[in-house]
Length: 72
Image 1 (spheres, helix red, strand yellow):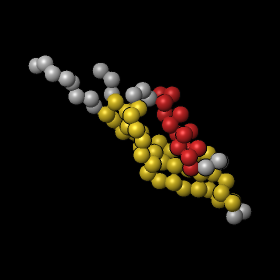
Image 2 (cartoon, helix red, strand yellow):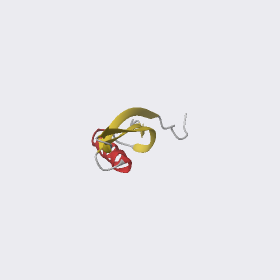
Image 3 (cartoon, one colour):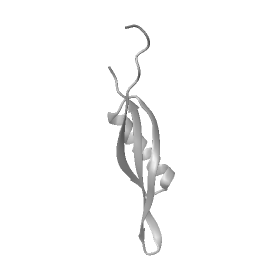
Image 4 (tube, helix red, strand yellow):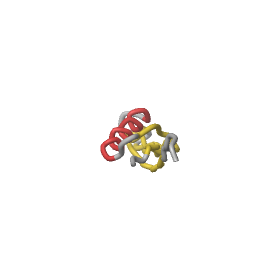
């Protein structure tokens, strides 16, 4: 059967947060995902939410879909 094998990818959904901003929350989510997932090829930000206290944002939250290639 020769030829190049097709890669199979999987998507997993995670949430992450930061007190600094949405960008930092995304970076934290990716950093944490990379500890346990190999072959990450991309991510999609599904939602952005913030926790507010006394009229100020105290926590930025993101939901992410992380795409990674499954290994043989």
